[in-house]
Each structure stands twice: as C-alpha cells, then as structure tokens.
Image (cartoon, rainbow, N blue to C red; front, top):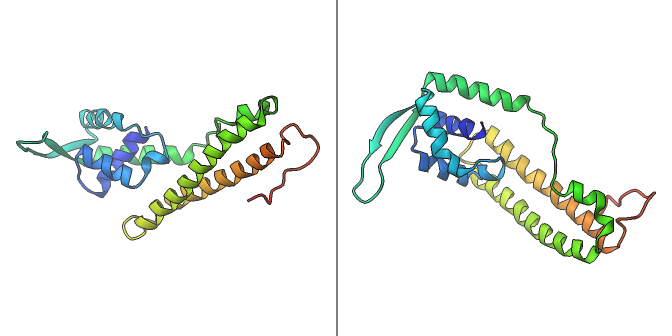
Length: 189
C-alpha cells in the first residue's frame, strides 16, 4: 500500500516514468521513512496501470537505453490516492523496536558485548540524525510544507533514538542493567 500511495502522490506532482519515481523517492529519503521496496515499484506501476489508476502518456524510445514509459494519474487514481492517504492517517500501529525484547533479558549477557554493539548503533544513529537534517534542509525550497513536516519528523525521531541509545549505553558501561529500584538518569546526553 505504501508503494502505491507514493507512486500516486508523485504522479499528482507531475507525469513521470518509474525510474524517475525511484530517483525522487531516494532523493527525498522516502525509503528511510517507510518500507518502500524499490523492487516492488515496477510491479506496483503495472498493477496501477492495469486497474486504470494511472495511464501511459508517452513512451520515450532510445537506441542505447530501454524505453521509458511516462505515466500520469487518472481520476480513478486520484480517488484511490485519497483513500490510501486517509487510511494511513487513521493507522495507529504499535511500535515494536527490534531491541525491546532483547533489552528485557540483556542483564544476562556480558555488558562489554552489548556495549560494543551499542557503540555501532550510536554511530549509525548519529549518521541518521545528520542525514535526516540534511534531507530536510536541502528540500526546504522544493517541497511542500507537509513534506517538510515529514522530513523534520524523521529528524526528531532520529534524535530521540540517539538519546535513548546513549542513555542505554551509559547504563551498560556502568553495568547497571540489572539494577532495581532507581529511575533512569534522563539527563544523559
């Protein structure tokens, strides 16, 4: 569903061919905010075309490259887009972080092993924070305010993840994962 929503949303902006859609999605870091499997793009385009939500505008032929089929959204596609978008706003799925179940039992493992993994996670989280802010800043002149909210939201979520990882790392290094009866030190930066 996310892929179809993304395709229809991009075609509301302008007519494009699938490869261009993929480039725009990557440029806007959409693959980092939802599960957009780029291999599914062409399949979703075919499905949307078969069901009449998008239609071919033209085919650009080239001797040295594959043909490029340019698509546009139809009225039926606009209706589906709105339906898919509103469904996403209604969703309120629980977040299941991959580390949550591991944290429940982490006091039973060598803290040095966990610390080493957290160091890697922190470096990656720092990269994600920087990347999310860069994507936001670069797109200020070219995307809607709604898209800027999305991009800045990704930055804020990345910052929260980084702070949480650093606080956890501090407790791992202090060998406090098994401690009971004390609140967390929420001032750890």
